[in-house]
Image 1: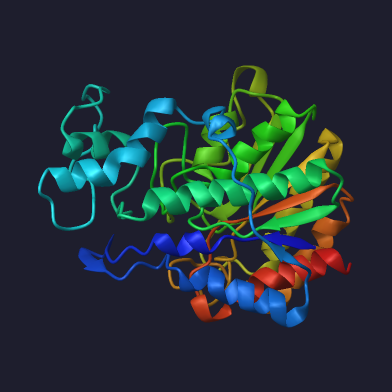
Image 2: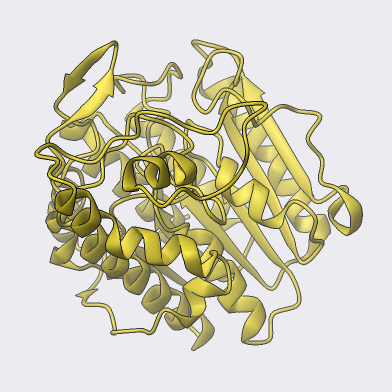
Length: 342
């Protein structure tokens, strides 16, 4: 299996994250993908190739152009106001407030933020743009006939909506790829999100559309980020009704219960008969993850990789979360080797 990777991910190296009332070292750090890359090479998964340089056109098929311009210019605007720290929103347009973009960068950040833990830093935009190029290069490999490919993206993307960032996510890489498949002739795309956290951004982008089926297995939002989306009764709307499927699960969920949900999702994917499957591959379902509460073991990741292979679909894997940094390489590559060697 080919892996697409860019060292430019390391340009995003935030020093602050708001957690537990403190500014702490971020869980989403450059070491995450370096451990994955090391494991890919150790097991001989396949070649690792650099991304192509791709225009923003495919990104703008999913994201608001004004939002993308905000991401591009945020850091320079923030620093021009004399701010010395990293850019973190101090106010957001809560219920009852006007949904209007302020001119002051402090207000602009709040308008585009869905959460306050994620700082924007000097290297955020070039890293985010490189991540989109990684994802689209892997997507092109599938379109050109590869059976599977892995986009080793960082930062992750599935929390990013059309014009919102947060949860460490800025561009929704898997959504951009799903739209690219459709623009290149696919009639139906399935997006399966196996990250511990609900893919709220992906859901919101495709919620009213029947050409992308979205399925997400995640921690119950009554207890887990993003808290305000990801409930089982969210089934799509308008033309998209019946094409959105959420599987919220309780604290301490182990593989037996989790895999039952995955098998049900796979049955829905088979019935939908998509042209291609895109997997938001987060491995923060691991029992040792510091910000999650599922109980999957490292061996379980290989088991469900094999299950995904049984769908016999062209499959794009896009890296999302996973914050047990020492184990992220083994867990991620176990999914991919399980898929490659069913």
